[in-house]
Every structure is written in C-alpha cells, then in structure tokens.
Amino acid sequence: MEKLLIKGGNSLSGKIKCSGAKNAALPMIASTILCEDKITLKNLPYLQDITTMFELLGSMGSEILLDENMNFTISSSNLSDIEARYELVKTMRASILVLGPLLARYGKARIALPGGCAIGSRPVNYHLDALKLLGAKIKLKNGYIEASAKKLIGNSIRFDGVTVTGTENLMMAATLAEGRTTLLNVAKEPEIIDLAEMLNSMGAKISGAGSEEIIIDGVDRLHETVFSIPADRIEAGTYLVAAAVTNGNVTVEGINPKRLMKVISKLKDTGADVKHDQESISISMNRDHPRPVDITTAPFPEFPTDMQAQFSVINAISKGTSNIYETVFENRFMHILELNRMGCDISVKGNHAIIKGVKSIYGAQVMATDLRASASLILAGLCAKGETVVDRIYHIDRGYERIEEKLNYLGADITRLPS
Ligand code: EPU
Image 1 (cartoon, helix red, strand yellow):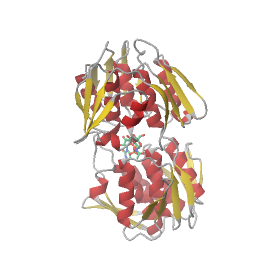
Image 2 (cartoon, rainbow, N blue to C red):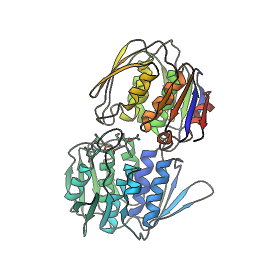
Image 3 (tube, rainbow, N blue to C red):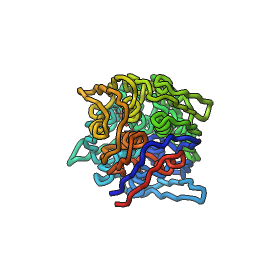
Image 4 (tube, rainbow, N blue to C red):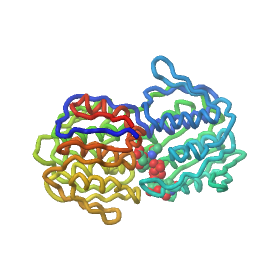
C-alpha cells in the first residue's frame, strides 16, 4: 500500500487552484442516467471515487468518452443493466445515488445495500422512505435494495432527518415523476444547488434548492447539456487549514467564499487573517500558536462535518483548550487516536472531543481510516517536528486530487512511497 512521507516544519505559501468538487460530481454523473441524450461534464476531478462511479455506470451499459480537453461525455441512452453490485457499492457508498435515476427512467433498480463505514452506520432509510412516498415499491432481499415503480407520482415529502445524498436522490427521481413533488426538511448544501442547476440545464423544473423547501415539477424527458463541476469547498478549506497550521500565507483560487462562511469565520477566530473576493480566499497566519476554537458540526450552513478532522489539528497545536462536538456522524473521531500518537492531547467522550493545545507535536507512523481523517494526519505531519508516515492513503486519493503535488507546490516536503 502506498504511503506518504511528510517532513514537517515548512511554512506554506503561494497560490493554489481548487479542483472540481467530488461531492458535486458524484450525483451529477448519476443524473446522466435520467437522460437519453449525451451529457458533457467539465472540470471533473481525477479521483478514485469518480473512477468508481464511472465503473458503476459502465457496468450498467453507459458509454463514457474523454476528449482532448479532459471533458467527459456520458451516454446512458440504453442501459443493459439496472444493478449496482456489492463489489462496487462496498467501495463507495455514494453508489446509492443511482437508485433515484434508475427508478425514474427505467422503473426498476437493484442496488447493494451499503453497510456501515468508518465514520458511522450511515443507513439509507430516509432515501427509501421518501422514494416509497413517490410510489416506489421497495424490498430488501439478500443484501440488495430491490425497487420498482410503473411511474413515480409526485408527492409532498418531509425527510425524517436531513440527508445530502437522500435529498439528491429524491430530486433526481422527481424530475421525471408525474406532477409536483415538494421536498421538506431537505439538505441545503451547495452541492444540492449545483445538482439542481445541472438538472434544470437538462430541462428539469426545480426551484428552491438551497432553501427549506424544494419544488420539482415532473417533465417527460430531459435533454443534453454541458455542465462544469464547481470547485471543491472542502478541498479549499483543507488547504486554508494547511496554511493556518504552518504559519503560512496561501491563496486558494476558484472558490466561492459563500460556500465556506462558517469555516472562514472559525479560521478568523483562530487569529488568522482571512480575506476573500468573489472567487478566492487568502489566509495569513502569523502567531506562535493559533487561538483554540469551539466547533459543533451540523448540516449547511453550519460548520461542515467534512472539516472537523482538519480543525482538530488547529486546536491540537493551539494555546488553550477547545471542544469539538460532532453531531452529524456518530463515529467521526478515528483520527484522534492517531493524532495523540503524534503528541496531541485529545480525549473523546461520545461525540465530544476535548482538545488541550500542546506546544509542539512530533512525527510518527500513522494510519488513515477515512478521507477527512487522512487529511488531518497530513496536516498534522506538516506542522510536526520530524517525519510522519501516513499509511493507507488510498483513502485520501478518493477525495483529494494530487494532494502531495499541490502541497509541495506551496512549499511542503511530501513524498509518495510506493507499496
Ligand atoms: N442518515 C440516516 N438515514 C439516511 C441517510 C442519512 O440516518 O437514510 C444519517 C447518517 O447516518 C448521518 C446523517 O444522517 O448520521 C447525515 O448523513 P447524509 O445522508 O447527509 O450523508 P451522505 O449523504 O451519505 C454526504 C457526503 C459526505 C458528508 C455528508 C454530510 C457525498 C457523496 N457524501 O454524505 O461526504 O460528510 O453528506 O455533509 O456527498 C466526505 O466527502 O468525506 C463525506 C463523507
């Protein structure tokens, strides 16, 4: 297994460009199933999860072409299969995103039931309950979700809990349903707005994405479009934290700061100087130690759970004690034990981490357990004394495009060690 070797202590500086957002791209690729025509996606990030989603669509009969400008054209005009097999679903839970589109366009789907993962049990009951309210018949059999519907019929649906991919699945399914669907208690993440914009560019009639209530008026068919994936707000946030923990001076380009307002505000609370215009965010940190910041994760527009592990590192080297409450996933503190092996002083009680800032941390051999946990270990390696080796970095390759190249460009010293 490949590893990353990080020689800590370098201060990061310079400008860096964000890649396309993984969590925007995945539902967009799934949405191509809704349409007989070709869909072209630009600015797709080169990531393992994107490759897995293409593999899934390819296994069902989609044709995927890459042109000389690195744009992908996807044609799902005539799928030969409506099944997402366990082998693929077990490597990427977001495979569940093909359920809504398959049901809407083909009236049936067979999707392996995703199991728990490193960050929590992550059931899909909200997706299934909501699809039933559109008229889908759903059975669980031999570890698979078997769904069918002659025609989905619009309805008013209140989700039992806020779910990002659940909201996306329902939005996609309802585009081809008969009549009006109203979705309530929906996720308001920017990726929901991105997906609605893409679907509308295909002829869907969706309004209210990003607000409390999404209204979808079903249409008979969708048509071709060319759509560019917006920048990855979590990647941007991670590089801003990299600058903060190394007393750096970094500008992240191509990112709309409105997508990161809570993160920017918390970075300012650490004592960093953060400035932004419409398409870039700059951070400059010039303190012996950051100020500690308390954080409670929650759905957008609150502080994102996907930035929690990274902020654990800022707090770990801060001057003082801080609290992090993780309210979205029940088991998202796996990085803490590894950070403590690098000299951090963090204790965890249930969903509450109590972080006592230490003067310095030191390099160690550590193990990545999930995507954002791996990012936090790299960040810790950047500000640690000595060498850190992060093992199981396939987790990071799922969601960060060329992370060591980008960080090295800013002055880090990271080498990918072959397996
Ligand atoms: N939940 C249920 N039942 C459901 C659906 C969700 O109980 O049917 C619970 C989950 O177990 C969790 C909470 O509701 O406790 C929120 O989960 P959500 O469904 O919103 O998460 P998701 O859609 O599976 C997406 C991102 C995650 C991100 C979360 C929260 C994608 C592909 N994934 O997951 O991204 O953490 O929203 O913002 O969009 C990552 O990129 O590292 C990542 C994990």
